[in-house]
Length: 286
Ligand code: FAD
Image (tube, rainbow, N blue to C red; front, top):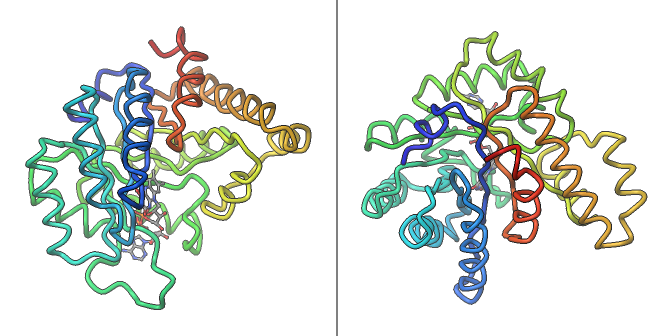
C-alpha cells in the first residue's frame, strides 16, 4: 500500500525504522529484529540505506521480507550522493520487481573521503528521477532545527519546498526532543505553502552514548528536562532505558494531543523498545 493512502485515512499512525546490517554475518539478527518489530502492527516500517551503498542490497531484501513474510508496508530509503545513475536505477528496478511502492528519497551525507558529489548533489534531483521512473509514493527528509549544512532555516525551507515540488508525497522529520520546535516549524512550513503530510520522527534515547551521537548527527537541541534525566539516570542502564522510553512516549502523546497524526519511531533495531512504546500507546494509537 502507498503510504500517502495510509496517511490520507486521517488516523494517528505509528511506524518504526530498522537499519540493515553492514555484513552478511549480522543479517539474520537484524532480520529477526525486524520481524519482531513487524509483529507490533505498525502502519509501515522504514528500512534505511547506507549512503556509501554498502547496505543497499540488504535494504531491498529486508523491505521485501517485511512485505512478503510479515505483511507490513515497507518504506525503502534510497540515498544518491555517492551513487551513479545506473546504480540508482538498478535499485529502482529491484524495488519494482519486489512490488515495493514507497521510497524515502535522500541525498545522504557527503562522504568524508574528500570526493565531491559527481552525479547527484541534492535529494530533489533524486526525487525528480524517481517520479519519472515509476508509480512510487515518495517521501523526503526535513529538519525542524535546520539541516546541519544550512546557512539558516529560511534557506533550508526554500530547498524543502523544492523537494516537495519535485514530487514528494510526505516528509519525515529529523529527530527532535522539544515538541515546541516541531509546532513552530509546522506553522512556518504551512505558511510557506508546503502542504504535504509531515511525519514526526521520534528517537527514544535508551543509553548515554546515544545522547552524544544524536547531537553530533543531527545538531538537535536537548532540553534541560531531558538532560536532567540523563544526569539522574545515565549511570544506571536499566533506569536510563526506562526514562528514555517514558520521555519518547510523553513526546508522542503530546504530539497526538496537538493534532499530529504521523509518528515514526527510530527504534534502532530494538524490538523491546518498540514493544514498550507500542504498549504505552495502546489506547492512544489504535
Ligand atoms: P537534501 O534535501 O539534498 O539537503 C541537503 C543540504 O543541501 C541541506 O542543507 C539543504 O538545505 C541543501 N540543499 C538542498 N537543495 C539545495 C539546492 N538546490 N541548492 C543548494 N543547497 C541545497 N542517511 C543515510 O545515509 N541513509 C538513510 O537511510 C537516511 N535516512 C534518513 C531519514 C530521515 C527521516 C532523515 C531526517 C535523515 C536520514 N538520513 C539518512 C540522513 C540524510 O541523508 C542526511 O541528513 C543528509 O545530510 C541530507 O539528506 P537530505 O535528503 O535531507 O538532503
